[in-house]
Length: 582
Image (cartoon, rainbow, N blue to C red; front, side, top):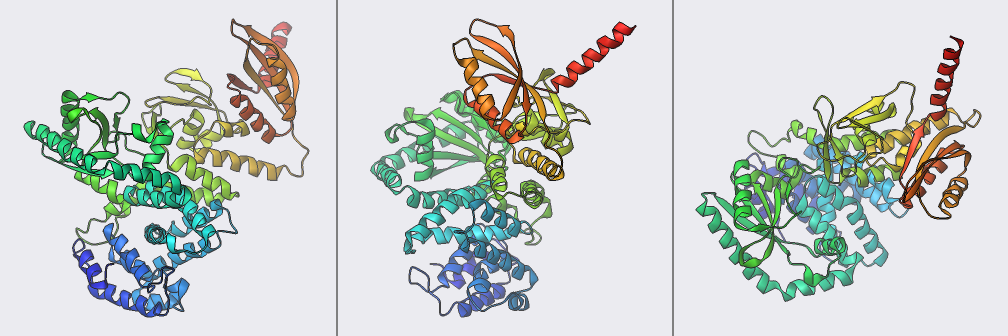
């Protein structure tokens, strides 16, 4: 375990602005505060804050954050007060320590609150300074490394689940892949011990063979690049048992069939060399179809950049390759922490905050919303998904999660655009707002001042921003109309039903059980395999209508929602009446 002097020397190696006296003072302060305390593993408590500070120094963070790592438990677990930390170390460090303390306090209440409520508190506590979250991640990482010493089995499982569901995804969202991988794997050891042991046995069995292969393949790749005058170095990182398990589950293959246990990271000087390297590899070796991803031209939502490809490489081995520059590699390892450059000072650049607008979006939704489950849903739906890039008619790029719809696009442009959307054109073709968008699509949203968002859009929207805005609109609407007479809604569903007995009756039953009245049914079109029916509906409860749409989707039926059909018909009738008068 690292000691105080080693920690100071480690921070000095990357931060020339460090005042070592501050870290020494913080160490002595923490040592005195925790002198009578021991950890669950039986060691002096000071071991934990030192370990947290060590993890933060691995991320090359500033001295205020390292100092916070040493002091992070003093306010919570000892008689030390916020004011005494301000007096000794200044307001900046005291605020950081206080922020970490607030998160720790909410964790202790986790048994009484939902994970969504805890997530809400965590985000609000870290929104003022993201360094609070960095310290908390380091704190959680060391606690997970020593979780086996906790006596209560229920507490172990609860901490592991919390880590897997909240802290690992947040580490991923900040681009901190190394910490994310370790948090996931440590949690996996408690949540599915048998599966992890099985994978570890397999890895141990093929270890020597795997290392020999890596060295020989790396040599062949470097020689090939040298011949083409590309300067590069290759590093390898073995996949964790959890990432292997996730891949097995996703691809539905056996452990024995998994060949790409080690990933090859090819690190070159600049972006031009990235693409040149890709061309060299693809010219020499067979690329595996469907395995190429260019995250340099279209970075991941957490700003990760690399070129990914899979090859049948040297010695006919199937290999995964990531091609990146040193700067990209630094970000892939340290994430947001890579923004501390230490060129003119050790302060974090405010410009870098622009890349973390997602945190501000979260805070905005949390402060406006009512249900904790909705905040957590935002996290799962928006923060951690792959991207689709679409364009406005003026050429602005809108980033959406995979499977994003025109509804999500409208709300991404502006909440008012989403609230008043009535239709859209995708690449010049008129399509429903529920249409799933693809990379490169150009979207024009059609709006109307008199239209409000439909509650049934919730079954099609995928971004947290869109879903939160729709819910917020209807929650406000319901509050306004509580004392008023219940409102009735009218809409039309056009559904393609298989040409089979009983299908019409089954759909009619689903409509009835979800509280909608069928006013009229009309056969619109007859084809060999299906019949298109039009159902005019009276809706008394919009929540039930959302359930109805979900059930129709589960039956994999093609359908279309026609809004305000009655108004259109009334307009046509009025035109005819006026025509007859003339």
